[in-house]
Amino acid sequence: MRLVLVTLLVLLPGCGRWLGLAAARREVVSDALQAQRFPIGAEEATLRLRGQRAVSTRCDRFASGEVRCGGCVRSHCFQLVEEQGLTRVATKDDLTEAELLQLWEPLDAESLTVLRAELADRVQDQLIEQEKAFVPRWGLTAGLLAGVSTDATSVGPGGRAGVRRWFDVHLVGHAAFEYRYRGDHEVSLRVGLEVARWTEGRLWGGVGAPPASVSFFIGPLFRLPAFRGGVRTGVGLHITDLKSAPLFFEVAAETYFAGEASRVVGNFTLGIGL
Image (cartoon, rainbow, N blue to C red):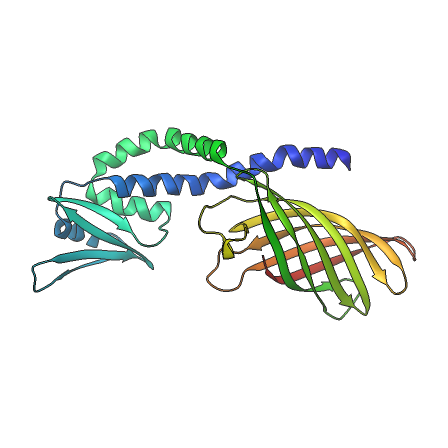
């Protein structure tokens, strides 16, 4: 068990950095695109983008003579802002890296070639700066849940509440108290680690919940009133960066070792919460 924990402590931060690389690339491309000034007018930019697949554009001319141009890539929208004969792209939504490049290519392929040559270095610099500037912080974890185990035909409702601790941009620790009712009252304590990525300003409810995380957890569990003790360990997926309710899914193995013969039970949990 000790070897497993040490291995997780070594591997999880590296996994988090790998998972955060795509998000960092998108941020670098987005910032670079919006900082770029293209040597064409907004109406010309609109015409060039109109020929791209999945890109829709339009310009509206007002009685005052003002022209406003913009469009969407699928459901992600952007504006074309003309300043002194130069045009810049201002994104309203979080366009993917592919969508950002799709906008940039027809506007100025030469500057995009320069960005691509520098992209790897820019991304690494950004990741390093984020990690240097990151301050460890606390968050909350809470939710309502329902679980089904392999030794029961009924659904066991319950809930959990606890705290999270961000150790760095990619690694989160958590501790929580959990209650379920499955014929008996079941209580458990759990501690775990999560692979995630801190995204400033986009966390659900402002309480430090990662937009998405993969968790690994372990802890004791007890069933009452007839005492039965055991251990639960498993993995889970948390998705909070949604326009609807945040969700989590978990698969666990439970081993009972007190009050009855030792055995292993599987458990699947679906929940709403942080």
